[in-house]
Length: 338
Image (cartoon, rainbow, N blue to C red; front, side, top):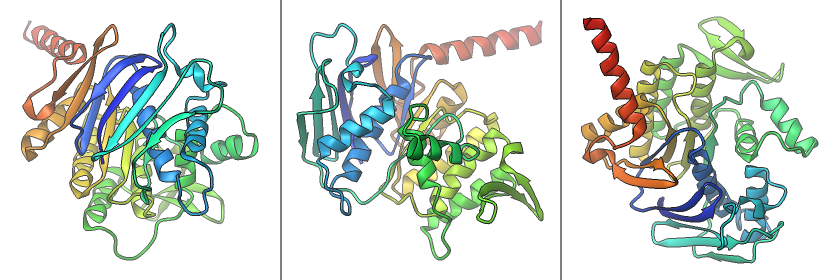
């Protein structure tokens, strides 16, 4: 799994170093702080390593990475990703266990990365990025936009997910933890999301009733995506899952239940990276860390580009989001008590 990352002059992340990564990792910060940027940087590296030397792939790791950065960040020139005004090149280095993958390029780079070192063995597993917005109802639009029109709009996190969802769930024996998780997900959903081959669209099945995906809530569709990826075996025990704003479209109880499933899957081997600005997400992960004695590294943006690394096993992090949530709670209690 990913064990550490070091970024320099990578968009809003001019100097970030995060060591001691665990099975569940949390990024917290306000809007525009670079949470999603960080997740996409890690995702681009993982997808490059998973694509390199897989099957009949003949491209170099540098070619795969260049294309992945181009379509993930949708920059005309990947040199645009270099921090504005930076005197030095953009550099990214990630470690999978004790093997490193590193690259760098300057602001004038168009579509060719020349500085790249790869010491990571080819991977058979798949990583996936779950955006804040669901993609089930948009799947045909995403595929047409990217595969036929070759147009900017939906970045590679959406395209890769839309493609991963093409495969129907498989029968037969699955990992015990995956099967348990799917049952828990179905309990949260109150039904099942299925793909209707004859009509070419997704639908929600509750008992004997079937509903078009368009009238199904955002939260239901979001949870159903994870269920589908477990069911069709796209995800394996060595996968890395990136989730942007897991709280999006979910009420607090659903967030708690969803994160319990994340905890179960992490114990089986899947590594998670979550980006959030929700007190409920932070608090629930803190409780999981305490209950399981599990290290859950958290990196939080402190303002002015400074990042603080802590561990939820040691307590709640010191962050403005946490402070504001507590302040609002105390204000509410004060009003209730008069």
